[in-house]
Image (cartoon, rainbow, N blue to C red; front, top):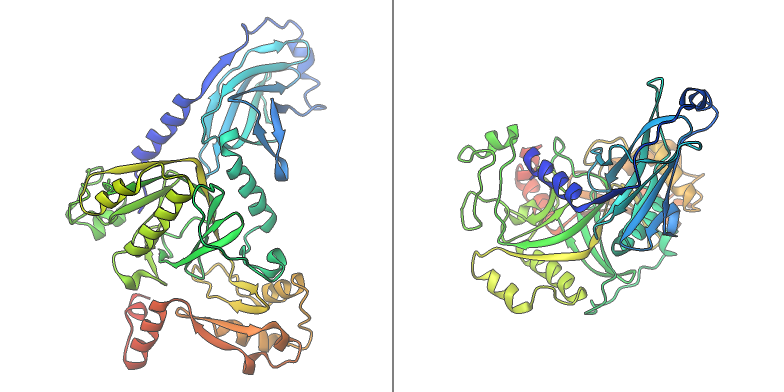
Length: 451
């Protein structure tokens, strides 16, 4: 499901309302502004934040509940401070339209921003000069102190690029597992789209993995870092003003509030918003798992959603009690748990993964041209695997063995012997892929008909 534009407008309004801006004094009259403007070609504008602590991969973490932003722009007439939250895609929020010039001689502009707990994203300045020309500073990556976990997760995500967190090159060939521990809040979620897999991690260890369904090709799941700031039991559904709503839900109106107990509500018992436009919510059928079924959301079985969300609640010290959660299962009353700080949700699209010494090739479900011979050779080389004895034709056959229901797996040791095709095997992507495979052997499967 995708939220309506009205939802996004409300989200932006909430963010802006949460930001307290305090400018320092009136803009002074600068008689030398024209002369200074001639120097702008020699000096790029710069934005800085204080007080901050240096995080990983250039992330800056606020040292208090507010920061001072200083913009140096010699000859500037005006400045806008802009902010792109990490889960807002390309959408931008104006934090301050014209902070005051604190030092007209040096072109310094200063403003103070009070940061809400979920603040995390790029912050930069757009500078306008006397001649009407504009420049932008390089962005800084800034997060609130409460959101430091998001910044750290983003730093690790940037280091991994779009590769799976399960890669041997990152894990050393061994993924540690552990049962969930209560009151230990360092948790995150990863979503491996081609593998149709969602994993909950705590303290860097794998707690549990779940099978999922993901967005259809025309409504792909957004790749990148997201954050889960709340869990909602018995959610209402507000249909967005989109063509797919009119096509697939003819008995609803865009913007209509559809209660949890209404059979037209497709969200099920739980939804977990991922920013302003995407959700984790209940699957319509078990056969959703392992398939492209949604409008840009992650779908899970109801039992798995209960298990996942209760593990999150336990890790975060039960901000909503067990008793209230149990009651929500038997009624339709809306129940909301706020997650502070939000839980990082890293969504990746890695179709070639070496995990535990085994190369797994997943289908390129969104047709992004990832399963090429060139990419496979690069993956093997970056993992220190010598595949010189494998010619392009063999690699192409290996890639072709991954299909809509199956991945292809082979021990990396077989790659060096030239025995990869004979030693490798196809494996079902999910338990529902097994069902689809059996159905296909006796006729056309539901998945095949959809494609």
